[in-house]
Length: 96
View 1 (cartoon, rainbow, N blue to C red):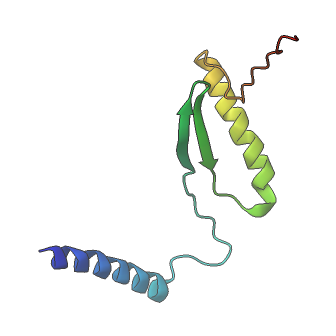
View 2 (cartoon, rainbow, N blue to C red):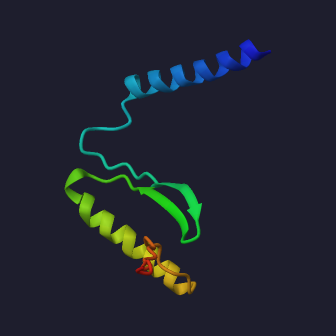
């Protein structure tokens, strides 16, 4: 049964590849909409550390980068949550 399940995944990927090559559903210059990848890297006392990877053309990268950060900041503000930032605590050591 395990071999059959392994073959089913392999054959479905092969069929999808043949479909892409033969029918060519995309042409050069077509825009494909893809959702951004959002990954939680860690959770600490300051909140979750997110890695947001939106798909964009290289020429639009920085516009999308800053717009994504602004959207995250705005949504957290609506929920009265603090904006994720690096927290540092500095203390002065007593002198002898």
